[in-house]
Length: 274
Ligand SMILES: C[S@@+](CC[C@H](N)C(=O)[O-])C[C@H]1O[C@@H](n2cnc3c(N)ncnc32)[C@H](O)[C@@H]1O
Image (tube, rainbow, N blue to C red):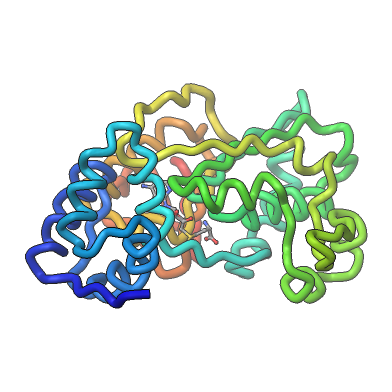
C-alpha cells in the first residue's frame, strides 16, 4: 500500500465540500485522520493523489462515495450504558413518565446511534425498569449518517468482551449467543431488535421528515462535530418534537448555549422541555 500525501490545499477542498454537503466542520487537526483513514481507499481505487480522489468524490452523482467517505472519517465510538449518571436519572424519572402514559406507548429517538449500543441500551434499561415491559408499545427510531455502523446495528452482533461486562440478568434477557464465521458473538434478541427502526439520516442536511412527538430524544456525542449554527438549528428542531417535561439527553461533554427558554438543564447533560 502506498502512503499518499494529503496537501493542505487538498484538505481545504475536502473541508469545504464536507461542510457544504453534510454540515460538518472538519477542524485543521483532522488532517491526519482524513489522510490516515482514506489512504486505504485511494489504494483500493488505484488513485494516486488526494486531488484525484476529491474529483472522484465530487463527480460521483450516486452519493455512494460520500457515504463511504463519511463512514471512514466519522468517529463512531460508543458503548452499552454509556453516561452512567443519565441512566440513574432515568431510573427516577421513569415511574412518573410511565404513570402518565395510559395507552402504554413510548416513542424514542436515538439520533446518531452509531452501531446500535445506545438504542439497545434504552431497551435493556426499559426491560429492567418498566413494569410489565411486554405489554408496552415501544418504538425507537435510531438514525445515523454512516451506513457501515447501521449495518452492524441492524445485525445486532456484539463482541463477548463488550457484553460479558454487563449484569448477568441483562445478558440473559437481551442477548443470545451466535457464531459468526465460527467466532462467538452475542446477538440482541429478535423481540428487542424489532422495536428499533434504523434509518440512514443526516441530522443537518436531510429534510426534516419527522412529525410525531418523542417521549425522549438522545443525541449524545454527535453535535461535537457541528458548528454553532447547525447545533442551534438542530436543538430547535428537537424542541419542537418534545412535549413539555420530556428529556433531551446530550453527551456529558456537551452543553447548550441557546434555547434557554425552552430547555432547562437538570444535570448530567440532561435537558427538559419547559
Ligand atoms: C461518537 S458516536 C456517538 C454514538 C452514541 N450516540 C453514543 O453516545 O454512544 C457519533 C455518531 O454520530 C454520527 N453522526 C455524525 N454526524 C452526523 C450527522 N450529521 N447526522 C447523523 N449522524 C451523524 C456518527 O456517524 C457517529 O456514529
